Length: 217
Ligand code: 3PG
Image (tube, rainbow, N blue to C red; front, side, top):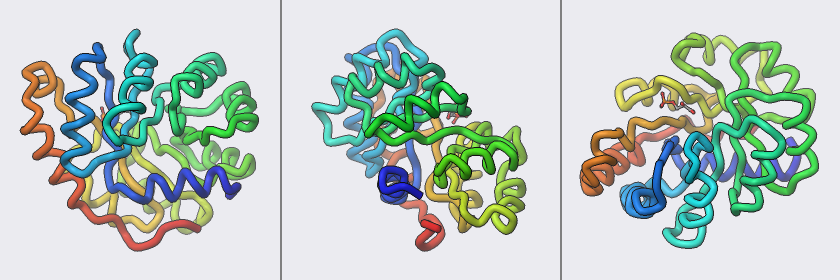
């Protein structure tokens, strides 16, 4: 693992859960980020699924004491935009040669997505030992990740996609899982209602989850 990727691993290892957020407005993003940080989840992924995402990354990065990454980054241009907006890490549901080229030349670390053993192997070959396992539940969930541990001992995962509070502990118990990602800590109805105390309670419960001991390969 390169120093840059080891740094990403160590950042992700500071938190059991990374909230994956698709937010429409900066006015919502700031209190939401504050609620999550107050609950003990300081590492946030802002997905580029809304027109306001880059502005939100800029705003949260400067304000609330969170470490903000950009998610759903699909193109080299989006990678560069995310870096310019101040993203501290970049996440994609997959990986393409073009994205890997940009990531390789960037000082901002990349968490590429993989869903099969061949995808994991190709990313290991390129020096990526810390990967997003996506979409976790439809791809086989805990049993699948567990089955990858013995043949692919160099890979560590942040699984996301379909994980909720009930499923989270089984993922975190796996030795090849660094942390998990998900949107369940910021449900749309609570965000729409501006119920920040309820989101802080969800974050607090997620922050209390404990991953398996030291996972860096
Ligand atoms: C992602 O982008 O990582 C996922 O969409 C998050 O998945 P979830 O909404 O099922 O938690």
